[in-house]
Amino acid sequence: MALAPPKYVIGFPEDLSIRPLWKLDEERGQACRQKWLMENSNDEVDNFVGHNKLKEAIREIRDIPSHLPIYIWCGDNIEEQCGLRFFLYLLRDQHNEIFLIHTNGQQVIERQWNPNLYEKKRLSVKERLKFLQQWEGLAESTAVLRQWEQQHIQEVSENFYDSLIVKRLKEMHQEQGHVDFIQTGTFF
Image 1: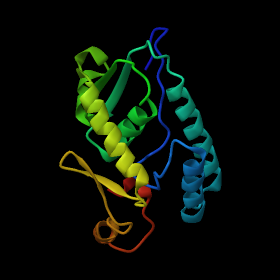
Image 2 (image 1 turned 135 degrees about the vertical axis):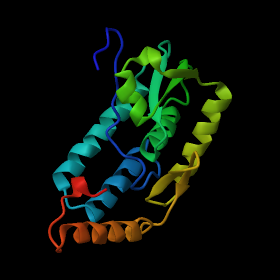
Image 3 (image 1 turned 180 degrees about the vertical axis):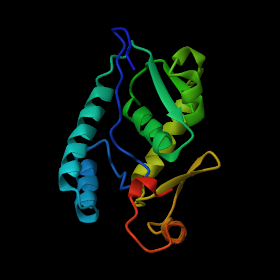
Image 4 (image 1 turned 30 degrees about the horizontal axis):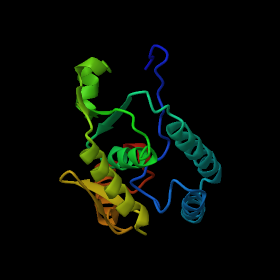
């Protein structure tokens, strides 16, 4: 989406619903997350690129001048809710006005990315503190998987979705008539 200068968009490259979050704003936390990725993922090139993009995004967020208002687009899903809390944690010492623009998938399509049609809410100091405390709890945890349930972030076990995945695979194989390769993009 194009914005007239001096407006600037910072895209956050990481899905914080999975993988360790411990001390993610620090080098040691980023190294811990990177190590976990190397041990649990088979795409070393993407892991390296993602690690560098994360560091760059953190730097950009921290470099936002304190006099500028900040607009955070966030929907009701685990990835964006974790990202919101981390973003606000990175800005914990800033005094910017922060607005939350609530989005959901269908609204985005219907409103064609027109920010004036979305619900915009200025975050109070109390709300910012609540999100900050929630992030601090997440960042001290050793959990590597989270879900968004009833407007709350919940940590779940690493195998939480396994039975759902196996069930869906069986259904897809039945639809095919025989066991064959299934593209992950068509999984759900």
